[in-house]
Amino acid sequence: MAEPIQASDIEEICDLMEQWGIAEVHLNIEGSALDLIRRTVPVVVPATGAAAGHAVPPSEPSAEITEEELEYICAPAVGVFHLAHRGFPHGAPQSGDQVQAGQTIGSIELMHVPNDLVSPVSGTIDSILTDDGAGVEYGQPLMSIRPYEEVSENEAGMLPPPG
Image (cartoon, rainbow, N blue to C red; front, side, top):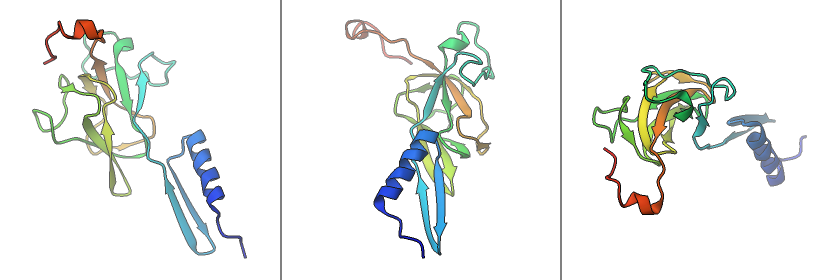
């Protein structure tokens, strides 16, 4: 008979999941099941070409912006990608729409449970790189965002709000 799983065992498994970037672990030990699912925050990969591992060109290239100025929002887990259907003028995010940091832009559905995907930066959506309802892999680029230019607190009072 195997020893029961201790809290320290679960903590060690969770540490390994974090270290290796594993989103889920399913254990079956002598008829007892344990499912560990790690909730993650969106992975944002600055576009630096092939060195970043995500050399994905925008679907609608913009002449005034270089790829290095874009930020890519990548899938935090394996699942089905869904665009948000609230808070956007066209019912779902599109190229050219403005987003704020913390705004829900979509979700990744995993085992029929949607996990919100929020924008970590404020800016303008440059392109949607993955179709709504498509299966995605961990780290797969989903959309690119052109971040707003950062300004100091003194300058912020002198600029009109974006949009």
